[in-house]
Length: 257
Ligand code: 13P
Image: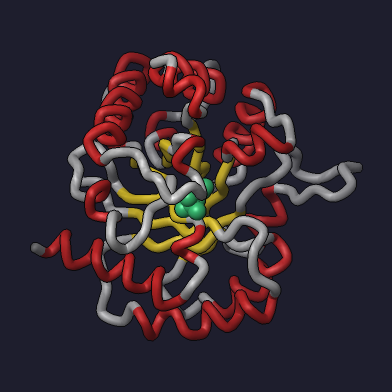
C-alpha cells in the first residue's frame, strides 16, 4: 500500500509573516487526520522558521528547488546540505515553471535528483507535456523522455529509489482552472509506472505518483480515487488555510469510505 501524499507548492507566494500564520492555523484545521502525508513546499526564506513551527506537528516541509552541489561559489543558490540541515524532507525538482522560465535541462534535473538522494532528501520529480505536445498526441513520448532524462544512469540502491515521488503535471492544466480528466491522468500515471517497471522492476510498485494541475477540493477525489494516483501536487488551492484543509479532509474521508 502506498501512503497518500498531498503536497502544497506555494511557488513564489507568501511573505514570512503569511507563511507563519498559515502554519500556526493549519494543524488545528486538520486535527484528527491521520494515515496520510501532508507536505508544504514553502519559499526558501520561510523554511528555517517553518521548520521550528512544524516540529510538534504532523506537517512535513519541502523545498521547491535546490542546487546539486553541497556548497560553493554559486551566488543566489541553496544547497541540499542547507535543506537537510533544517530537517527538510522533500524537494521539488524539474517543475515545468523551472524548465520553462529558467531553462532547466534534463542534465541539470538529473544532477539535482542524484544530489537529493545523496543528501537523504526525497525528490518530487515533475514531468508533463505542454498543450502543443498534448494536442499532437506526443504525451507518452515527452513523459518517457523527461523520466529517463532525469533518471537514466542514476546509481542509487532500489530501496532508496523507491522513495522517489513523481508528479505528473500537464503544463496546460497548471494554473488554468482546467485540470486533466481523472481517467486520462490515471492512464498516464499507469504509463509512468510501466516505464519504471521496465527499468527498475518492483520499484515501480512503491514509487508514489501524484497528479498536479488545477486541483481543488471539488475535483481532488477524481484523481486520488484512481488506482495509479497516490496524491496530488497542489498550487493555488494550497495557499488558503481553509481551502487546503478542506482538500485534505475530502481526501481523508474518501480513503475511509
Ligand atoms: P495549480 O494547482 O495552481 O494549477 O498549480 C499546480 C502546480 O504547478 C503545482 O506544482
